[in-house]
Image 1 (cartoon, rainbow, N blue to C red):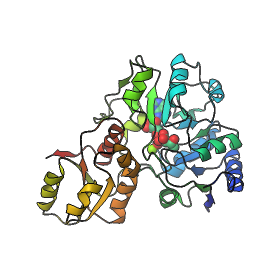
Image 2 (image 1 turned 135 degrees about the vertical axis):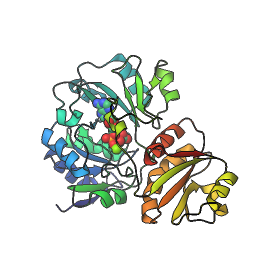
Image 3 (image 1 turned 135 degrees about the horizontal axis):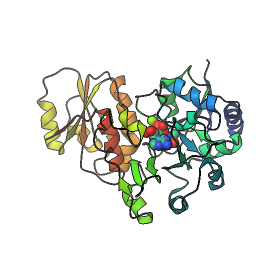
Length: 343
Ligand code: TXA
Ligand code: MG
């Protein structure tokens, strides 16, 4: 398959590219699209064959469900058994934006999209290109992150091309993703409702609308193979460069000292911008020390950089964090296979 590269930097100037992408999606094809979180690999969510081809292109296990993207609230009732009141309260505050809500699915949503589950995950993205494309396609779009399964999520069209060239019909370039980590995933099918994956809409923000919201125990701990995960995505190894990744919790001076004592070959450091000048080993900054949003923006690009630089091991400096820092830590833990050192 030859992948088409389409540019959508500007909605008006690049209208023909959007029409082309919408036409491909309507005819059951695959298009990598920009969203405010990460790039998504989109297909018609209501077409079982189109949804199935997403799994093939990504090499994704078929029991890992897809998120269905809509442009308006009016598109949701047909997708679900019943719209819970809580959905409207959450939507009013956080949509369009980086929040995904799991509800009981209707018969309209094929099992290929829901990964065989009786539930469906729905999100209304805020990226103008994603929104316009959903409108022009005229169907809700199933879209997991547009990376090969297991690789870091893509935050630029270049990342999508690196993983999916020749495997998808088109890549729509809408520039770099603003947030940089995937949406917050929560389910309204548990009582109380539960966050399954932290994101830019933080637990604290969600609790201002639903005070009873809880955090699933799998967010910061390894989910046992035997346990049927609340979110199937939790059980897979994720976001991993080929290199070994080790998280190192500590201050700047301790981190410098830790690196200076390393005897092995071929290691490098993923650090904060403030650390860079003091490090003698190869290093790459993934954000600013006290700015978790900047870390979220940079973390996946930095994990990809580790392989481009050919490091055998990446030591990643981390700090205690809440807010969107929880999302960054959740992704880094998975990239590191839960390997963490405290200095
Ligand atoms: O920001 C995002 O959410 C991006 C952009 C493209 O919208 N999409 C994304 O999709 O990150 P994906 O497939 O890489 O991650 C979706 C996660 C997976 O861990 C999946 O297991 C979980 O959401 N999920 C989806 N539907 C679910 C369901 N019905 N029940 C439980 N978990 C579900
Ligand atoms: Mg993903």
